[in-house]
Image (cartoon, rainbow, N blue to C red):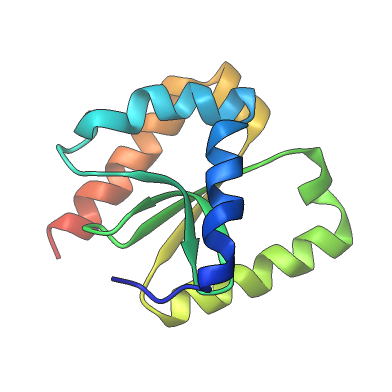
Length: 121
């Protein structure tokens, strides 16, 4: 089990109950071990963050970014977050919301390719 700030647990529950359209759309394709027969978790606390999707077996985090993530302040914060997650052995894949909604199959292919690579190491 990866470490996390216990104070984030309730907030992660709130986020699960109020997922964005893109998060709901991708979750429908990741839940119930549909991809590589492995478990994904949504809105999972890790370290001092809540990640959108997490697969512990592949040590993979998937983040969906809305428009605000392209602002300089958010880009810097996301880079630091990715660095901290990488320091505990996790790979972060980022997709923007529009990409998830409009190019779902391409997003799933990229996730699948990363999963296969990480699961066969």
